[in-house]
Length: 343
Ligand code: 5AD
Ligand code: FES
Image 1 (cartoon, rainbow, N blue to C red):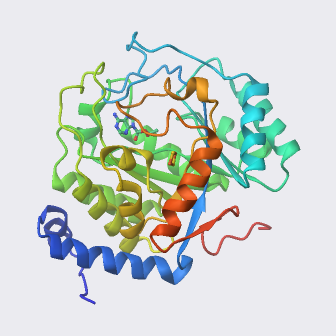
Image 2: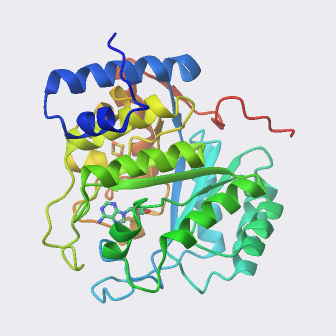
């Protein structure tokens, strides 16, 4: 097994830039070996509920940005959200991920109500929120209400690059601060970035990795940028499978304990993308539990897979796909290695 000198920026940059497939394969093999130390062949399942596609933000890459008037907007009712969780629970999920745009209708009070209702029905499930930037008091209140985890991708760790992807009202400093606050409160925290966004350089990706080493998040979401036609970035090329896989592998090598999803975006750019993600060191999949009627409306990018399938179809499809590659589906909560629930 080759040793990679990942503490050296030059070596990391070289690996990010290499197009040598043999070298990439060596990286994937090393990443798999790291993953096995803490997680063996286990692949953890999370049930994703996309509960609102309203968003007050206007990120240049995202299909549900507020300026996109081609989107049919929806919000699930509390009852619909609970019903999605019930379907998930019946399918064996022990983790629900509640994701949405930054929707002002979902005030702190309404989020608290949602979390409390889910917590009441499912005292032992993990509840993950992914609803963007809020202030410390809000994050604390959601935690008190029973949320355990929070996903908030940093998108890019480079300030200048961040500004090229977002309107002036958004700031990377603010976003990073949210991540540190969430960690401080006691959430298991997920950061992450897109690969191949417009204007991204290898140096930016290096910065993403170094930022992750500093933050030490428990989860890292990495997916290719995929253009959405009705956005300012609609005509830019998307991120490649090869580079995304390398970034997953490097993240695994630098953060051996991290929970890293093989993302839907990865499965969208290549038929076996998610499987290849697992082979590059990922260890989580997030099948969709949202009601079938709204699936297509949560279109962050074009050609998203699994939008026509029932929750049960995705659940069992993923199980089969995982087993085909020698992995073991794991339906438990899947806390990060070493996490003490009683602490
Ligand atoms: N392509 C790929 N991923 C995207 N996201 C948003 N828009 C796109 C796109 N066009 C990702 C962002 C966000 C996550 C929920 O989806 O990284 O944090
Ligand atoms: Fe959704 Fe295969 S995972 S249909």
